[in-house]
Amino acid sequence: MGRNAVLEALQAGLPVKTAYVAEGSERDDRLRDILTHAVTHSVPLLQATRTELDRLTGGAVHQGVALLLPTYEYADIEDVLEEALAQDGIIIACDQITDPHNLGAIIRSAAAFRAVGVVIPSRRSAKMTAAAWKASAGMAARVPVAQVVNLNRALSQCGEAGCTIVGLAGQAETTIDEVRQDGPLVLVIGSEGSGLSRLVKEHCDTLARIEIASTVESLNASVATAIALYELSRI
Image (cartoon, rainbow, N blue to C red):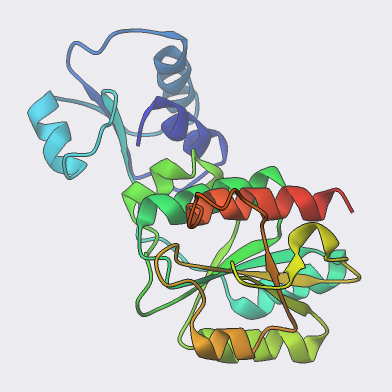
Protein backbone atom coordinates (compact mmCIF):
# COMPACT_ATOMS: atom_id res chain seq x y z
CA MET A 1 0.00 0.00 0.00
CA GLY A 2 2.80 2.44 0.76
CA ARG A 3 3.26 4.62 3.83
CA ASN A 4 1.00 7.47 2.76
CA ALA A 5 -1.86 5.11 1.89
CA VAL A 6 -1.41 3.17 5.15
CA LEU A 7 -1.51 6.35 7.23
CA GLU A 8 -4.56 7.65 5.32
CA ALA A 9 -6.35 4.35 5.93
CA LEU A 10 -5.58 4.43 9.65
CA GLN A 11 -6.66 8.05 10.00
CA ALA A 12 -9.88 7.34 8.08
CA GLY A 13 -10.81 4.74 10.69
CA LEU A 14 -10.90 1.66 8.46
CA PRO A 15 -11.48 -1.58 10.37
CA VAL A 16 -7.85 -2.70 10.20
CA LYS A 17 -7.26 -6.26 11.38
CA THR A 18 -3.47 -6.03 11.63
CA ALA A 19 -0.70 -3.57 10.74
CA TYR A 20 2.62 -5.02 9.57
CA VAL A 21 6.05 -3.36 9.64
CA ALA A 22 9.06 -4.90 7.95
CA GLU A 23 12.11 -5.60 10.05
CA GLY A 24 14.77 -2.92 9.66
CA SER A 25 12.45 -0.42 7.97
CA GLU A 26 13.94 3.05 7.67
CA ARG A 27 12.30 5.41 10.13
CA ASP A 28 10.74 8.60 8.81
CA ASP A 29 7.91 10.89 9.93
CA ARG A 30 5.29 8.78 8.13
CA LEU A 31 6.38 5.55 9.77
CA ARG A 32 6.49 7.22 13.18
CA ASP A 33 2.96 8.53 12.62
CA ILE A 34 1.81 5.05 11.60
CA LEU A 35 3.31 3.44 14.69
CA THR A 36 1.94 6.14 16.98
CA HIS A 37 -1.55 5.85 15.49
CA ALA A 38 -1.52 2.06 15.74
CA VAL A 39 -0.50 2.13 19.40
CA THR A 40 -2.89 4.95 20.32
CA HIS A 41 -5.87 3.26 18.67
CA SER A 42 -5.02 -0.30 19.74
CA VAL A 43 -4.44 -1.56 16.21
CA PRO A 44 -2.64 -4.95 16.34
CA LEU A 45 0.94 -4.33 15.16
CA LEU A 46 3.24 -7.11 14.01
CA GLN A 47 6.80 -7.16 12.73
CA ALA A 48 7.47 -9.21 9.60
CA THR A 49 10.40 -9.97 7.35
CA ARG A 50 10.45 -8.27 3.96
CA THR A 51 9.93 -11.68 2.36
CA GLU A 52 6.78 -12.19 4.42
CA LEU A 53 5.56 -8.69 3.58
CA ASP A 54 6.22 -9.27 -0.13
CA ARG A 55 4.08 -12.40 0.08
CA LEU A 56 1.30 -10.68 2.03
CA THR A 57 1.12 -7.81 -0.47
CA GLY A 58 1.40 -9.97 -3.57
CA GLY A 59 4.71 -8.41 -4.55
CA ALA A 60 3.41 -4.81 -4.54
CA VAL A 61 5.69 -1.93 -3.54
CA HIS A 62 4.86 -1.59 0.15
CA GLN A 63 7.63 0.65 1.57
CA GLY A 64 7.97 -1.67 4.54
CA VAL A 65 4.39 -1.33 5.83
CA ALA A 66 1.07 -3.00 5.07
CA LEU A 67 -2.40 -3.42 6.51
CA LEU A 68 -4.60 -6.48 6.66
CA LEU A 69 -8.13 -5.30 5.92
CA PRO A 70 -11.44 -7.15 5.82
CA THR A 71 -13.08 -7.73 2.44
CA TYR A 72 -13.97 -4.38 0.84
CA GLU A 73 -17.62 -3.44 1.34
CA TYR A 74 -19.10 -1.79 -1.71
CA ALA A 75 -21.68 0.96 -1.28
CA ASP A 76 -25.26 0.65 -2.52
CA ILE A 77 -25.99 2.55 -5.72
CA GLU A 78 -29.15 3.88 -4.05
CA ASP A 79 -27.08 5.54 -1.31
CA VAL A 80 -24.65 7.10 -3.79
CA LEU A 81 -27.54 8.35 -5.91
CA GLU A 82 -29.31 9.79 -2.88
CA GLU A 83 -26.17 11.74 -1.99
CA ALA A 84 -25.87 13.08 -5.53
CA LEU A 85 -29.48 14.23 -5.52
CA ALA A 86 -29.09 15.90 -2.13
CA GLN A 87 -25.94 17.79 -3.10
CA ASP A 88 -26.45 18.25 -6.85
CA GLY A 89 -23.23 16.27 -6.89
CA ILE A 90 -21.28 14.24 -9.44
CA ILE A 91 -21.12 10.46 -9.69
CA ILE A 92 -18.35 8.86 -11.75
CA ALA A 93 -19.35 5.73 -13.65
CA CYS A 94 -16.58 3.51 -15.03
CA ASP A 95 -17.22 1.59 -18.24
CA GLN A 96 -14.66 -1.13 -18.99
CA ILE A 97 -11.95 0.28 -16.71
CA THR A 98 -9.99 -2.93 -16.11
CA ASP A 99 -6.74 -1.57 -14.65
CA PRO A 100 -6.95 -1.33 -10.83
CA HIS A 101 -4.36 1.46 -10.86
CA ASN A 102 -6.64 3.50 -13.11
CA LEU A 103 -9.60 2.79 -10.83
CA GLY A 104 -7.63 3.92 -7.79
CA ALA A 105 -6.48 7.10 -9.53
CA ILE A 106 -10.07 7.83 -10.59
CA ILE A 107 -11.16 7.51 -6.96
CA ARG A 108 -8.38 9.91 -5.95
CA SER A 109 -9.59 12.46 -8.53
CA ALA A 110 -13.15 11.97 -7.30
CA ALA A 111 -12.01 12.91 -3.80
CA ALA A 112 -10.03 15.91 -5.05
CA PHE A 113 -13.05 17.39 -6.83
CA ARG A 114 -15.68 16.29 -4.29
CA ALA A 115 -17.54 13.74 -6.40
CA VAL A 116 -20.01 11.85 -4.22
CA GLY A 117 -19.12 8.36 -5.41
CA VAL A 118 -17.87 5.98 -8.09
CA VAL A 119 -19.85 3.23 -9.80
CA ILE A 120 -18.28 0.14 -11.35
CA PRO A 121 -19.86 -2.92 -13.00
CA SER A 122 -19.30 -6.33 -11.45
CA ARG A 123 -18.04 -7.80 -14.75
CA ARG A 124 -15.27 -6.64 -17.10
CA SER A 125 -14.08 -4.12 -14.55
CA ALA A 126 -11.27 -3.62 -12.08
CA LYS A 127 -12.24 -4.36 -8.49
CA MET A 128 -11.27 -2.72 -5.22
CA THR A 129 -8.01 -4.62 -4.78
CA ALA A 130 -4.91 -3.63 -2.82
CA ALA A 131 -3.51 -2.12 -6.04
CA ALA A 132 -6.59 0.06 -6.50
CA TRP A 133 -6.49 1.08 -2.86
CA LYS A 134 -2.83 2.08 -3.11
CA ALA A 135 -3.41 4.05 -6.32
CA SER A 136 -6.20 5.98 -4.58
CA ALA A 137 -3.62 7.19 -2.01
CA GLY A 138 -6.05 6.29 0.75
CA MET A 139 -8.99 8.15 -0.80
CA ALA A 140 -10.92 4.89 -1.15
CA ALA A 141 -11.62 5.40 2.55
CA ARG A 142 -13.47 8.62 1.78
CA VAL A 143 -15.17 8.03 -1.59
CA PRO A 144 -17.86 5.30 -1.70
CA VAL A 145 -17.60 2.81 -4.57
CA ALA A 146 -20.80 1.06 -5.67
CA GLN A 147 -20.61 -2.17 -7.64
CA VAL A 148 -23.59 -2.90 -9.90
CA VAL A 149 -24.58 -5.94 -11.92
CA ASN A 150 -25.59 -3.89 -14.95
CA LEU A 151 -24.05 -0.47 -15.60
CA ASN A 152 -26.64 0.50 -18.21
CA ARG A 153 -29.44 -0.24 -15.77
CA ALA A 154 -27.67 1.89 -13.14
CA LEU A 155 -27.36 4.76 -15.62
CA SER A 156 -31.07 4.48 -16.40
CA GLN A 157 -31.82 4.56 -12.68
CA CYS A 158 -29.74 7.71 -12.25
CA GLY A 159 -31.32 9.36 -15.29
CA GLU A 160 -34.86 8.59 -14.10
CA ALA A 161 -33.99 10.09 -10.71
CA GLY A 162 -32.99 13.38 -12.34
CA CYS A 163 -29.28 13.06 -13.10
CA THR A 164 -27.80 14.25 -16.38
CA ILE A 165 -25.63 11.51 -17.91
CA VAL A 166 -22.49 12.82 -19.61
CA GLY A 167 -20.15 10.40 -21.37
CA LEU A 168 -16.57 11.25 -22.30
CA ALA A 169 -15.98 10.39 -25.97
CA GLY A 170 -13.11 11.53 -28.14
CA GLN A 171 -15.25 12.11 -31.24
CA ALA A 172 -18.02 14.10 -29.53
CA GLU A 173 -18.96 17.49 -30.96
CA THR A 174 -19.38 19.10 -27.54
CA THR A 175 -16.29 19.84 -25.46
CA ILE A 176 -16.29 19.20 -21.71
CA ASP A 177 -15.88 22.90 -20.93
CA GLU A 178 -19.19 23.53 -22.73
CA VAL A 179 -21.11 21.16 -20.45
CA ARG A 180 -23.19 22.95 -17.84
CA GLN A 181 -23.98 21.15 -14.61
CA ASP A 182 -27.55 21.96 -13.70
CA GLY A 183 -28.33 19.53 -10.92
CA PRO A 184 -26.86 16.09 -10.22
CA LEU A 185 -24.62 14.64 -12.94
CA VAL A 186 -23.13 11.27 -13.83
CA LEU A 187 -19.77 11.43 -15.63
CA VAL A 188 -19.14 8.21 -17.56
CA ILE A 189 -15.54 7.22 -18.30
CA GLY A 190 -14.61 4.53 -20.81
CA SER A 191 -11.37 2.65 -21.31
CA GLU A 192 -8.60 4.42 -23.21
CA GLY A 193 -8.49 1.52 -25.65
CA SER A 194 -12.10 1.09 -26.75
CA GLY A 195 -13.78 4.06 -25.06
CA LEU A 196 -17.45 3.88 -24.12
CA SER A 197 -19.40 0.83 -25.19
CA ARG A 198 -22.26 1.34 -27.67
CA LEU A 199 -25.06 0.71 -25.16
CA VAL A 200 -23.49 3.01 -22.59
CA LYS A 201 -23.31 5.79 -25.20
CA GLU A 202 -27.02 5.30 -25.87
CA HIS A 203 -27.75 5.87 -22.17
CA CYS A 204 -25.91 9.22 -22.14
CA ASP A 205 -27.78 12.51 -22.48
CA THR A 206 -24.64 14.19 -23.78
CA LEU A 207 -21.27 13.09 -25.13
CA ALA A 208 -18.35 15.42 -24.54
CA ARG A 209 -14.70 15.39 -25.48
CA ILE A 210 -11.52 16.79 -23.99
CA GLU A 211 -9.60 18.84 -26.54
CA ILE A 212 -6.09 17.42 -26.95
CA ALA A 213 -3.35 17.69 -29.56
CA SER A 214 -4.07 15.83 -32.80
CA THR A 215 -0.82 13.91 -32.38
CA VAL A 216 -2.21 12.21 -29.25
CA GLU A 217 -4.82 9.53 -29.82
CA SER A 218 -6.30 9.38 -26.33
CA LEU A 219 -5.71 10.12 -22.66
CA ASN A 220 -5.29 7.71 -19.80
CA ALA A 221 -8.73 7.15 -18.25
CA SER A 222 -7.79 8.54 -14.85
CA VAL A 223 -6.14 11.60 -16.41
CA ALA A 224 -9.26 12.23 -18.50
CA THR A 225 -11.39 11.92 -15.37
CA ALA A 226 -9.30 14.49 -13.50
CA ILE A 227 -9.43 16.98 -16.39
CA ALA A 228 -13.19 16.55 -16.85
CA LEU A 229 -13.86 16.99 -13.14
CA TYR A 230 -11.69 20.10 -13.07
CA GLU A 231 -13.60 21.61 -15.97
CA LEU A 232 -16.95 20.82 -14.35
CA SER A 233 -15.76 22.32 -11.05
CA ARG A 234 -15.11 25.65 -12.80
CA ILE A 235 -18.73 26.08 -13.80
